Length: 83
Image (tube, rainbow, N blue to C red; front, side, top):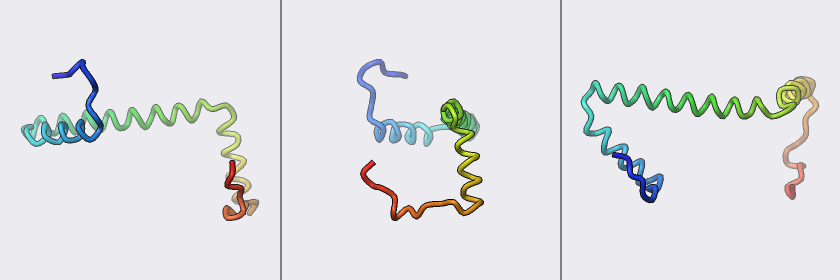
């Protein structure tokens, strides 16, 4: 049952999900695992899509790979830490 009141905390949701998983039959447990894998992949795909939609990201990433291959790097210890 889905509650429409105040949403539970993340730790509370995790405990609730673990309790429910413990009560599932092996068949239903497989269905739940498949669904969770689907949600996990979907979230990952959405994050990738968001990154790919950043204007110029692919071009800058390719340039950075070329700079790295050519040895054009900066010592991270000398980078500014106030930005």
